[in-house]
Length: 274
Image (cartoon, rainbow, N blue to C red):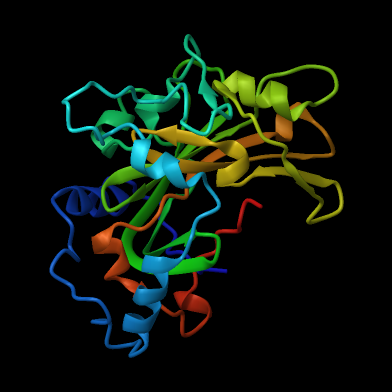
């Protein structure tokens, strides 16, 4: 697990890191294999370029955010159909917090939708990110996360993760609900319906985790693919969490920053979603 740097002063530390990240890609000039700590980075980069993802192959080419036809057509933030004829994830409208506007955005925009950072909660920073494609792949990045209050008072906590100045994951904690906990109901409360079957896991006593990897979630937002995870402790709504996490193929700049972790402090603590 990463020993993330703890902070008690958001404006001085995490916010400064986010502003720096938003000012541009600090690694844009890096060449593949340029990491002096990892002479094998070039080989790893070559592997990433050819590694298949578990998501539908055509989803990357047809995803919103670009027009494969070159006709200048307006592409929706969340696609509603795919060439393979199989259903895609749906992002529901009219929810307390708009999921589409929370992802792929700079912190200045994200924070207009949320309450202030929680004073008794700690954010953090590190200089590495991870994807599962499906292999676990690390690359250098400006990574920061912060825990916010919810000004709509729907969720107890909303944690947002930023990579190189854009939000790449959001976690909703303390999902409102009553009666027997149901993961599909939890998804609907944050504004999601997923077409695939979740992988069920019990990593610790009393903890239940439902995971949808790319191919089961089939969730594309702003042209990028996401995996989804729902968890609860002792089946209680007040301990429930829904996480939506970027798991898209690495772009050219990210591939140039791939590295092999050399020790515990160099390894991100993220866990695969299935």
